Amino acid sequence: MPRTYEAVYIFDSTLEDAAISEKINRFHGLLGAKEQPEVAHWGRRQLAYSIGPKDNGYYVVSKFAAEPNALPEYERALKLDDGVIRYLITLHEHEVGAPPQSEEELAAATRRDDDDDDED
Amino acid sequence: MRRPQKSCPFCESRVRWIDYKDDRTLGRFITDQGKILPSRLSGSCARHQRQLSTAIKRARFLALIPYIRGHQA
Image 1 (tube, chains in turn cyan, yellow):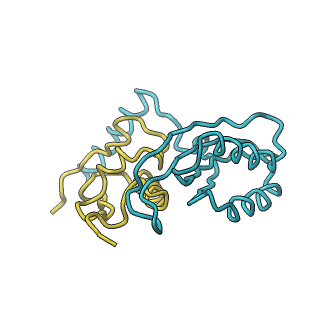
Image 2 (cartoon, chains in turn yellow, red; image 1 turned 180 degrees about the vertical axis):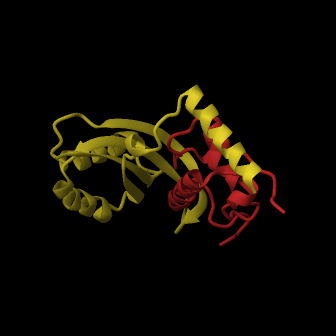
Image 3 (cartoon, one colour; image 1 turned 60 degrees about the horizontal axis):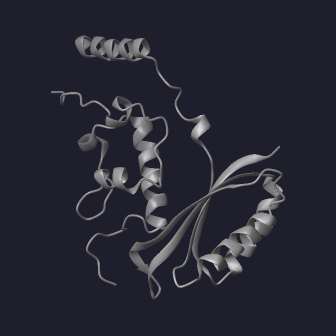
């Protein structure tokens, strides 16, 4: 069963934009995903702390669905690539967060809390 | 002696999942040194405080927020 992942890549900011796009396509090709991944380019920004000699990075965020057994190969390619300063792959967890509460439920929860206070 | 209840800023704004990429929001929940603000001070509920600490740690790894503010390597 495919799972949804979110990956953030920090590329070397000295790379050409075309080279970065080419690398991303190559990485995503390893996933064997049927659907095209959603890719958002944040562009060049300053790092909060220097990583080795680098002070700037090119951030790219992508969201994709892939089979878990396709990940090790993909991660290995990321690890070996010199153009990638850092990457983070996370499960896209937004679907399993706390359920949204309606106006009434929230009011009820607040009331319950208030009742608790009275008992002490 | 109970301290007055603070309301969770994330519950108030109906946040379901705290995004580790949102460095501006996360920046409000770290101290001047870069430490994670305790829920005692921020008022976050337990669920959101857990999400917040994970999000801050991920954002630090991605160099979106510093591990230590004002640190010169």
